[in-house]
Every structure is written in C-alpha cells, then in structure tokens.
Length: 224
Image (tube, rainbow, N blue to C red; front, side, top):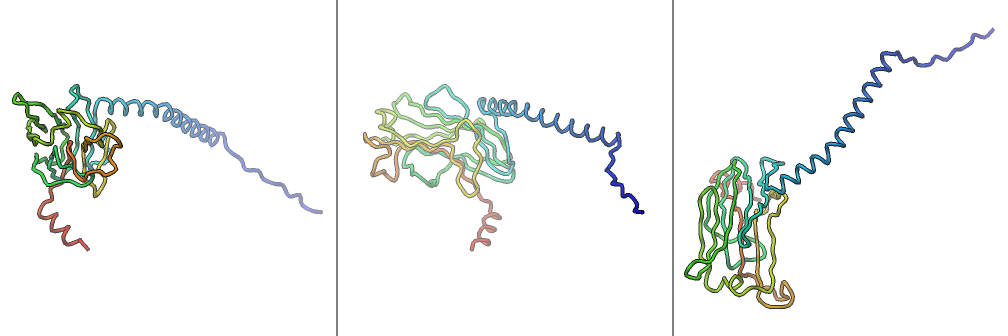
C-alpha cells in the first residue's frame, strides 16, 4: 500500500497579508505624491529662474543667471562663487576675439559669495561712451576708444552674441566663465562675414580665477 503524498501549499498569515497590503499602499501613495509634486517643482524652478534666483546644484562650481533690466544697454546677473576660490571680474569693449580672454584689470572677489553684477553702457555729456561694471557697491569704468564705439553711434550690420541667460549656468571645469561675449560686424551681408576678423568691437564680461601661490605651485608640480 502506497502512502499518499500530500503537496503542501505555502500559507500566508493574515498578519503578513495585511503587512504586504500596507507596504504596497504606502509605495503607491508615495509614487502618486511624487508624480503630483514634480510639476510643482518644475513650476517653482521656472519662477526662480524668471525672477533671477540662483539654485545651487554644486557648491564647488560657479553658478550664474541673468536678471531682467529695463535699459537696452544694460545687463545684470546674479553670480555665486565657491569657497576657497578668488576671481577677477573684468570687461572689455574692443579687440574682442571669438575665443579666449585678454589680460585685464578688474574687481577682485573671494568666495563663498553670492552677488549681483551689473554692466551698463552710457553716453557722457561730452559725447563719449563709457562702460561700467558694478558689484557690491563698487563700479569700475572704461572709456570706449574713439574707433570702438561706432556700433553704438552709427549702428551695426549684425553680431555674434553669447551670454548667460535666464536659466542657471554652471561652470564647466577647465573653461573660462564668460557672462557676455558680443562681437559686432559693420559690413552688410553674411553674419558672421566669410572673412571674419580675428578681433572686433563689442563687449566682453568674464570671471577670471586668480590662482594662489600654493595652487600655482601645485599646478606646476602636477603638469606633465
């Protein structure tokens, strides 16, 4: 006589079942809440961008965003620079190249710091044009060379224009942080011209990092 083999089905207690149902319900509720909050987060971020508020995603990198101005020849940005780093805020109104940065004087700023940069071009009573860069209540001015303000007095045929816009821009390691680079052209026709000049009139605003002696030495030692 053969013994009957009875298969044993797994049994789940009522307590275990209730626990599983509770976990599933909580997971679903969290997913639903996150789905509802996502559009709200995007809307809040859009409002912050619209009002020129910085959202810092990495405290070790430069962040900047454009702020609206009412004057057509003025630009404004909110900028954050990280701790332990020092920068020079500089600008130039002529001999502007497509890439790279010139040597120039400017305002020295140390991090960590969040501040507003304002750049404005205006015509003086004597008819001369000047540019001014303001930060933390300090303004530096540059007079336009006589042959570099033609685009302000007579107009221009077109320009190349790159700047930090009204969404947060974050520093790219190894690249200079340019707030505004505008190169103007006077000849009608193709913009930029087929024979594009190496340097033009316009406006260049940038942050140049000032290396400490210790950092310079470290950079020199690690250079291959």
